Image 1 (cartoon, rainbow, N blue to C red):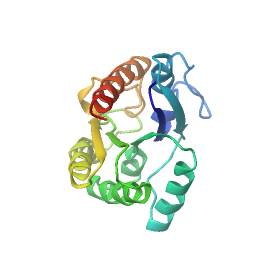
Image 2: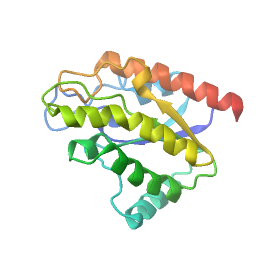
Image 3: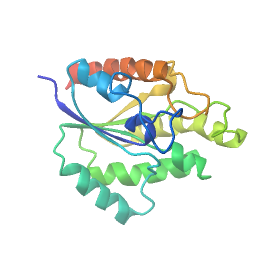
Length: 192
């Protein structure tokens, strides 16, 4: 039996369709979380459009309590893109992510996923934002290596296609992300 997985993230976890208006989402047949579910994983999609990393330790503690109440066996956390778009550096995202992961408890069963780097598009016109998004993966990897019991996955290595806006996954991007995440999970659970 595969473990129950909580996927905590932003619009790319939610399944936002950038072609839609007012926060519409791709159908379940497209979303990476639903593709994992179709492959036999028990998945709780806790993605939300616009979600950012907690700004204070208190916010991180409050969010951790809410997530722990969902009683998942594993938690995947993929956040930071919206923070970068609001002007934070990769290091600032790393510091906020560390507070969240510590609040969740770093004794195991956490997978920190770095989102794929942004590409030029209307949402990612600023070259500095795109550069910070390229730096986020290495920052998150260093964080996971520092924290005992936190695994790391770099979606930047999975060939995830982004849509015209430069930030959100395309339909093909969701399929590539699901394949990369499934492989990462299988590897984790072989060691579990």
